[in-house]
Length: 182
Image (cartoon, rainbow, N blue to C red):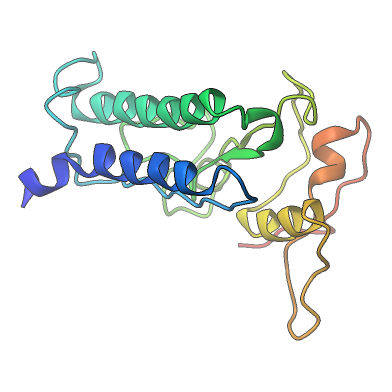
């Protein structure tokens, strides 16, 4: 079973780059949910034993490589200045990760189990190095992307997410949420 999983990150990365190639001349949305760094950990031979962090560290290094390959593909095709890239996680760290002193870990309702970074990059549109303290959730990506695409929210359903674009780009923007519940 493990041997089949060792190639998945490279296979998924290759498929993502192929998707970019196939769609580079038109608007596209690429959602890439990495298998790493969830357990079980199966870094490829290329990354196995390369970090000081054991299998977990090796998987993190392979994840980092994969994101770099996708960014490189966007750069080489001249798409970076016209592409919003969002990198985030679904929950806090597993036991080998760090919650930076916050209470809790993956699957726990404490802040360390829920609070994760969201890294957003869009050269010329999102200020580089900007830190936003306003809380948001993954459910906010949908309305944010729809807003950027000039589309409104669907009127046939309730959408719990909020558009984060103002807080990502404007200092002092109001928090879009009254409360965030988990």
